[in-house]
Amino acid sequence: MKLVSSPRFLPTVLWIDAVSAAGSGLLQVGAASLLAGWLGVPAALLSASGVALFAFAALAAWSAHARPIPRAAVYVLVAANAAWVLGCVELLLTGSTLTMLGQAFLVVQALFVGVVAELEWMGLRRAPAAAWA
Image 1 (cartoon, rainbow, N blue to C red):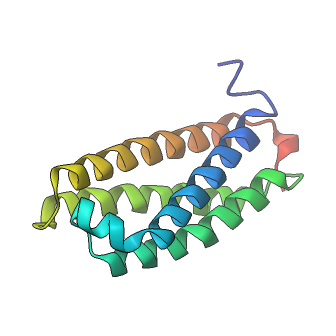
Image 2 (image 1 turned 180 degrees about the vertical axis):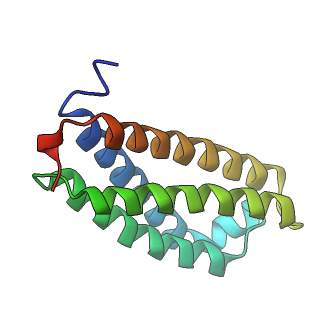
């Protein structure tokens, strides 16, 4: 638990979240048509969620860089990550056009985002009081 209470733990997790969101956003916006065929997910959904990821990545990067860390922003990021996981699960359950690759893509996204959300939540609970705005 020493790692989690380190003053660098939460900023590092936030940077990981920011970089992964920006990368996913670039992929989804830049290759929406190609991915739509491979995954069975509508290109419009991929593009729209990719654009949303850019805003999310900006908030995560700003939060990771800010000193002190804006606690409210981290709560928003954790909630948004939880919503993303629920959206992946919903799409898995209702997405009749999903390919096997699309199903795997959603499962991997949900697992990764869920782990990041949990790490951010742990960072919220264990960060030193001096780290917060």
